[in-house]
Image (cartoon, rainbow, N blue to C red; front, side, top):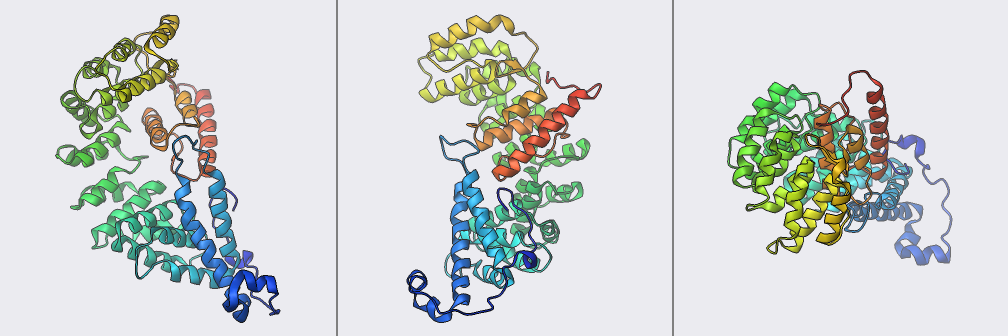
Length: 446
């Protein structure tokens, strides 16, 4: 492995058991200590496995770009992480048994160790380590919330195809936390079947329901989805409503559009309803969004205006730049929305107005724009490559892309390894190019 997780045949890559024991040199003694010197190569390998595993645990936190970094910045850290996995797998079955034993710290929760152990085991081909994966996953999920998150992350990213079968066995588990964790893993991997999603949406546990609402609805029947989402939409749990609105927006469902419009006119911030309304991509809502710009929660309305992409919203946004009651944070949001719609550069209010005056004649009503160009599927696919865009923003853009293409666009996740994202973006480029050549394919998003 270099930059993309893969399953490797341990027997093939194993460097072999030590055949000859040589007396350690003075430098070897100094590096590894008296115990390693006394116990020889076996102890050297044992310590190497532990150090590599600890490094994987630390490098997990480097996968999320920091402010000022690009989404490609973690690539080198991920390559180093995968190099540790290679080293452990090269030390063979004994090393993997050690990894399984080290996964759970009996005294203190250790999410990094849980992630590292499960991820390493998921990179070993075959069925031998699947029972250990199931055991570690179940213990971590039931023991501590952060360990549960680490276990879900490892299984979502893990390359072993047997992970799906392991998770399927947990969908009927009596423990709700295990059901929810299994749904989250399958949802991330894009392998949660429609019947399994329907079952999860009927679960009495809020955690399971929230996990199901995060699933991509790729290939699901719209009518079944609408029926499933109505339960969450009608409640007063803000998290569940927000997730349901977002899920419905990815399918442009009338029921979630109506609910988003109703909520946003009362409070654009509640359940992120203004943003969900914009994600439904109905230009008839531009007047609603404009009205929200002058009321409470206008920061959320500004964000929605940028997503909607209507040129008629530019002037109201420019007005906010001159509003003395607007905070610096709101000014920053307005500038971002103006960039997102018309590609206007950052600057003071006068400079931005001058930039708009120079290009306003090129914009038409009844058309959605993104960064100054008519919004097309191809344009959204290109936006996913923007270096400085945050994970959540890029994932939102993919939700837009999925909604515009009825989930026919290839899978993409901004939370994958950088190498996996790059492969996904290449597939998206090929898919967009092929779609543009097919007769009757609508690439514009009006």
